[in-house]
Length: 171
Image 1 (cartoon, rainbow, N blue to C red):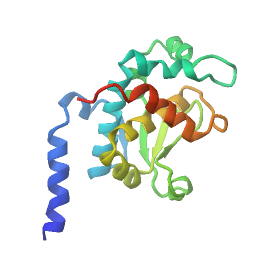
Image 2: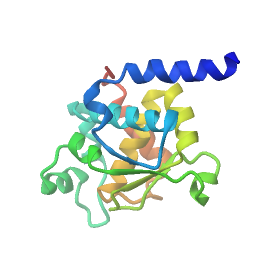
Image 3: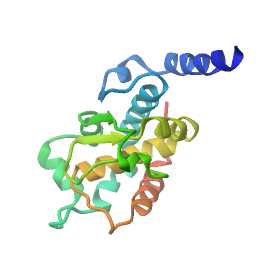
Image 4: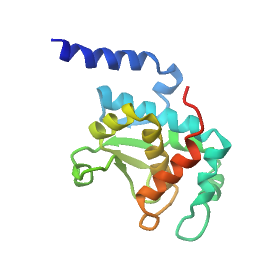
């Protein structure tokens, strides 16, 4: 019986610790329970990190295929990084081939505003390592702004995000 109660209590305590304004700040589809909580928590954490000038430098570290910095693309849209990440659409797509591959936590195509999340796997990683969950979502936001991949390698993008954004605090 305690095996069933303990995870529910953990989720309840974590839900109670999320500030009210972050609960409805993003559009999250088809996700419930701990997965939804982890995704909303990471979106809010990524947005807070992106409010920091050092973390925002990630937008000048990368360019789209035409050579424009991601900061320039975002400026043309008239959005702050935190506003932009909250305006993306987050979809639990755990049964797709990408999510069934080992290690994938989330994915999108360059320029697309729908971020597909491997719900269960993402929640497991993000709840135990919040900086990594936040970094994965910032990584996906970079793709939504037009960043391609391979090159740069996926792991290189995430490591650069962590280097730029890990010094910012989560509250």
